[in-house]
Image (cartoon, rainbow, N blue to C red; front, side, top):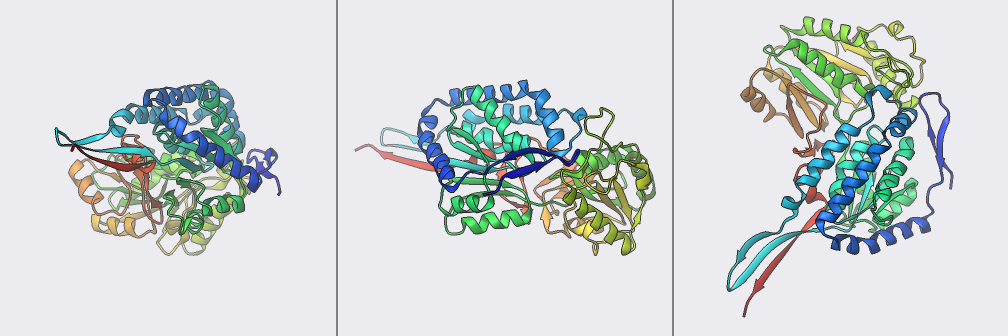
Length: 459
């Protein structure tokens, strides 16, 4: 076996190196998790909730080092303070609704019958987390899984190896038993072998479409349930009645924040023709105000992409679009930190169409294409012309209009006058090649539990 290396996008050095577990060691991890699951599930719900909250509290106490490590691992500027706002909000909400969501549903309790339904923990939950938000995406499944009585095995991306170690350290320090929550380093063959052997009761994977397909192939015939959040190409639509300044500020932030490396980031924008020129002018000014640079510099608003090869994909998409007639509006000379590697200047493209990869394939970088549309019908057609469906952002002054348009969009979440946000009370889900399943909200508990019916008759 070869060691797994984490190459920092900040300076190209090896930030961390870990040996993956052997198949035998990985098998023991699973066996330990399975043995620990029933005792953990037998603990009172209030105790599990308290331990999970304590684990997140311990993680918050590590904030300074976690924020610094995130910058080294995947390039996010330290000025943004990590992922703690979302981690805390999601933990609180999922813990607050646990008792009501997991309570038995009594159908009848009479002298003749007692009939009711319960939710039982599935067993061992396997989380395969991505590098772009290694804490937030883990928390989405980790909290409800542990609260519901499952044990959890976490595998972080090779780009954020240290994040999984910090999570395990925090939860163990809070009193969560080591076999109840385990962080592991696995290579692809061992991961696939574990899935094929029915090692897990539920698998949550966030990553590429290709990665999701590999998970499905490995799980084929095992009947292991999968939760998959895969690619995205999320659109924004600015209607003629939109608040222009608010639309520019939110949509451009959605396109550029985290160097465009957001699952629900804005990757294509459609603007009513009456506002198009003004929107583009303001978007260019907004983007030129960004500062690309070292993520440890407090003035940096745009850090490097997590890996030079990710930046290469974006550069190739931009070059192809320009060769096909697209017009770039941002001069890379305004961003001297662009080094041709992980540090990539942002870009806005106009004169784009859906024959270009930059408008059809996931970019996952600081680039956005903007098109003019004549009406809602054209915007709806273009928004639906995508293999993905995670979120869509509609900018209008009217709730009913947003709802009516949203009903015709093939996506998991409809936003009105906001973008790039997860509400823990609403289910996080997608359709088409974006995947299947859902996390957060009360529905998130359904993914990590199974229904069990009791039909008891008195004789």
